Image 1 (cartoon, helix red, strand yellow):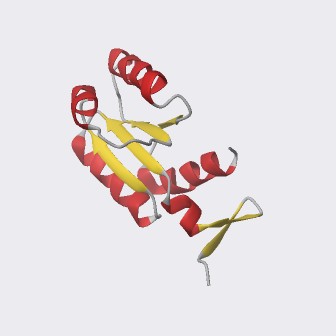
Image 2 (tube, helix red, strand yellow):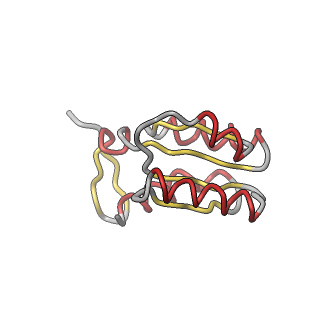
Length: 115
């Protein structure tokens, strides 16, 4: 039986969410690690970085479904990453997470469900 959860009166299969690849960029590594752990437990494939230069040099996946910005990412870093995304992964979504980590999983799931 497929694992299901209810969100906004809609069933979404866990396998569907597991295929989603998410990249996190945050100012502080501990924030990135915390959100990465939460999203991985939710079934997502996640990589996290605290510097945009790391993303540009190290991200090797052929797919990307979402970029999550967390913390106080500098406007220039955000702009550089959006430009990179637009060139390599134009269909990837962008989500800016503000606030504590308690709601990030639900917010990301909602963003994918609304797609």
